[in-house]
Image (tube, rainbow, N blue to C red; front, side, top):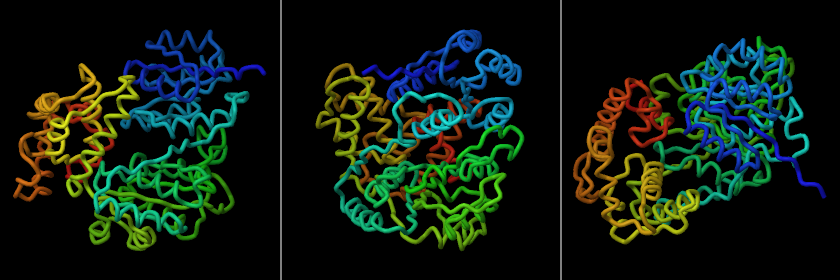
Length: 463
């Protein structure tokens, strides 16, 4: 039997970090990858190579309209997807109008890349000879921790997953709400169907509507093909609405109808479509306070708040820090080709003493840095203290937590929540000042994800 042909993807990335991340992600999905590091190399490759899909940072396209005119003349069958930052969303829309097949926000997430690949296969012969793929790959999810709080959460989760009612997952940023959402899907009768995630806080209303409900060809300028929405892609499965508390009041009306009547209209369409999906939503916001302030619809709140799962912050389950650290150490070592890396007892003790205001996500990022920077197969307490020391100061761990590495949770008698917010506010302001207002750089300086920074800005009233 002849081997399946390798499909080729061209990545135009001015940033080596972006190029490496996308190359690794595409390689995992079985694609051949070529990276163009300059605009000239990108255009030459588009003109003379036979790539099946092009992913290119917006900055590398130059005059967007002129680029797509030239690309359309020499490579009319290769879908080109623009890669944009959060501040370039409107420019991404303009790129679609100029001829791009779609746009993706950086950093690119696996499920969003799957969605674009699926769309490309529907509008060209891309993947025509490849075996069929699931739109969203669903891993076997683990929930690490044996604390009473986690046992109670898992017990409630199992009972909630069996039903069809809407599930609302609540908890602080970084506490693991997305893992809980995946587990609800995997333990449900819809586990065989897709699990599709929508970042409701990441897009303005007009783009969120088209992402959620899709659009017909000709629905607006630049809509040259029909685009299925995430609701349609989740048919027979689960639709995860992440950070539902950040949706604008205007769009809340449309969400209410979707959740209440299980119906929606495709943009540019003329008929009402039924939604055969299970809804799971998550938020770090205090929805009750938002309802009281008139910023969140009361009827939508009650429609969402059918079954609520509260994810405890890491400071309320310190006994889970050690198993989480061991799990992350093992998985990160494998992902980075480090073989077996072990955390010594004194290293675990030093890690256990930290308050981890950024919750599980902060702990995971910290362990990843330890593993990547480790000189040998063992990580000692000294290694942990040195890494904590690097992160102290105006932009580091100690500043963000309000504590020194030697201060334990048990010895803290102050109002930790108030102190955490004050310390986080100071650290974020300093990071933004040092980065010249660049939020992507500020997030990297703080050692958190860009999305976590946006959530913190909103939570602390700094946005």
